[in-house]
Image (cartoon, rainbow, N blue to C red; front, side):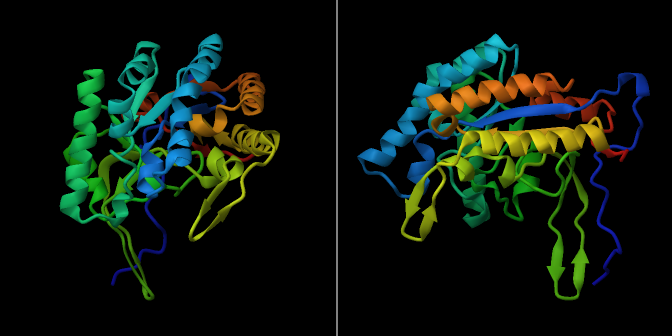
Length: 303
C-alpha cells in the first residue's frame, strides 16, 4: 500500500482571493428539522417520544421569528418524512428565504445500509423535498453524521453540491474524497470528488449538550445550561476570527431541542453576540457558491 506522508489538502480551492474581499469569517446557522423521523429511526414510537418529535413543529415558527428579526438566513436540513408530514412549514422555510437541504428520509443511518438501500433512500428523500418545495436541494447532511463508502459517489451522481456530515476540519470547507483505504500499515487517501464538505462537530451541536435521552444501550444526560454551550461556541468563533482568514463556523441545532423558552433566550443572546464580532451569517449553499467561484476559505493565518 502506498502511504502518503501527509493527507490531501483540506482547502477546497487553490486560487487566492483578492485581500480586499477578505472578511472576518462566516457563520452557518443550521437546523436539523428531524421531527418524528429521529424517533422512528430509534424505534421509539410510543406516545411520548412521538410527542417530543412533534414539538419540533411548535418550535420552528419561534426560530423563524428570531432569525427574521435579525435578518439571518439559515440552512434547514429536512428529512423527506418531515417534509411530507409538515409540508406547509417546509415550504415556509423557503418562502422566508432560508435554504432547505436534505437529511435522509426517515433519519436512516446510511452507513448501515446496503448500497441499493442507500440509493433508494436518497432518491425517496429527494423526491419528497421536490414534491413539497418544487425544487431539488443542493446540500446533504447524513442522519447520525455518518457516510458509507458509497455515499460520496451517490451524492455526486444525484447532483448535490455539498455535504455537511464530516469532521476533517473545523473552519475550512474541503473536497470530499472517494473512499480511503485504511489498515495497520497506513492510509491510502481517496481521490477528491466533485462534492464540497462543509464540516461539522459534535461540540457544535445542541443535542448532546441539552437533550435528555434514555435508550436500552445508554443514557445521554443532556439538560445542561445553554449558556455553557454557547460560551464554547463563542470561544471557537473567537479563535477562528483571530487565527483564520475567511473561516467558516458551522453550528447545528434541532428545533425540538433549542426551541424551549430558556434556550431560545440564550440563542437570541448568542446570535447578537456573533453579529457583534464582524462575521457574516450565510447558508451552506452560499459557502458552496463561494468556493465554486474561487474563494479560498479557512486559511490558517495565526497572529
